[in-house]
Image (cartoon, rainbow, N blue to C red; front, side, top):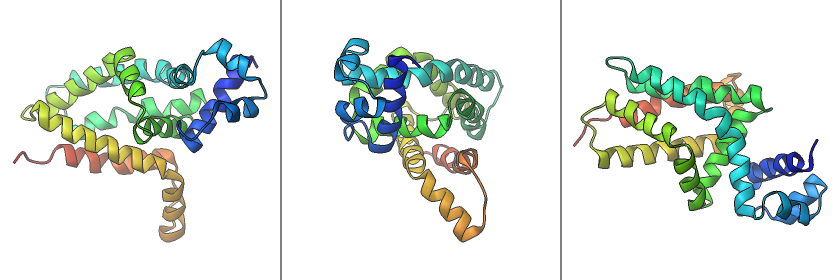
Length: 206
């Protein structure tokens, strides 16, 4: 494995587990068994390393997600459940790309919000604008009465729900097994949350 990929793999696991703010470059270099100069050589800074970790997933995810959203938008009257269901297969395909890829990516995405990494949100929206625009278009087609302001709030609350759910997914899986004897996995968690967030976005306007 190349030095660059060693650094990326170590950073991904540590960022997902401890957060961007809670992970030092020294911890990453120790995990990757490389020196700090290697990080500076390949990435230049911690911010650029964070972007590179996210880009590995987004480069894989975005084409599949764009196609799924385009398929929804092609329907005459899609439902919000269909809009959010469009995310399922592209997200689950990340498990084929990397081991535990779906869970790792969603945890990393959540860290971008809970760790106040504003530059990361800017990076994702500018580097992968078709994902955002496709999603907004699909939501608007499913619920055309939704104003831009109300859409902002509801999608913000949706992201909060998804981030919290995925950041505590291991605990949720344990509770489902211990309390309800339900054997499920990350795909089950995603399918459980979709009707909830779709109903929230679909709530009547005041």
